[in-house]
Length: 403
Image (cartoon, rainbow, N blue to C red; front, side, top):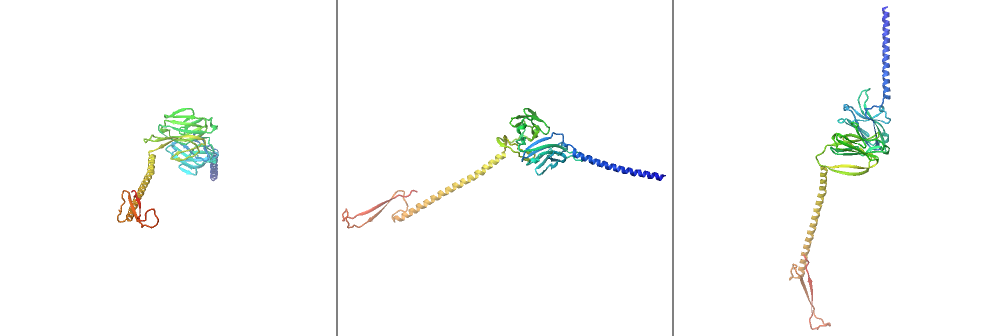
């Protein structure tokens, strides 16, 4: 009786274990299915900031700032792309502080943002991009912000330069361009850091800096910032409608060294061209001829270089002049020496011709030489008497050369 009871209990235990194992296997399979469905159906990740739409000229370059929370300073950052705007399938183009192909990513942890530089952009580069901060963990989503970039032969929104510099208390001017179809759209000048914006037709003040925006109605508007402060440094953007063009502003302290400022008016056809040096960028992205005010500073070092250039030009000229003077003086002395030798030789020849009674030195006054020829009389008929004797004489007058 007892043995039968134990047998039944053993069979029930075995069956319970098999049931539990089957349940665990089904649970694991269900977890995998749920995770897979989440991967293919999950919405695109965002940080809560507004998605940006940018345009750039074909073959041009662009620098894009990506801001993040300070608590993610030590986290990995990367730049991701997918032409079909599917974040879960995007391809990582480059991580922070590395360059891969035409893409460079530089992290600025002290300012809580990283910049992405893209060069030689083509039509196939049009699509969705993401600024991503890697959080880690399978079920933890990375912090990301979506941007959409359109590569066009003539960008709808662009700026003359994506980097401008000014000094504390000074002024800066930024010119933004838009296509004709954005003429009636809202024009703004905004700061990425706090999303504070200034609108065309209004004059606003921020930290004692005055911001004025004026639209000329001819597909461009100008942003004028006066009374700059060091805290105004950072990334801004021009916008027309939902399109943006990023601009970096650098404000430096007043220098004690005097500078010469030159204002130049330039009219040129601007194309997109970016260069980055220590986080600074220059982007030209317009095909419209524009007038650009450029502030050029000539430092004391440049003045010194100019002085060195003048010395390099003058020293050879002075040396050449001295050589010419020495050569001319030598020629004159040589001629004078030859002339003295010639006079000496002439005096010697004349002295030998005059005979014993003649002087060997030319006198200062005229000298007259006389030759007397005596001929015997002939019997030929002559107007004079044959009885007379005729004497013929010839006189030569010699004037010595002037010394």
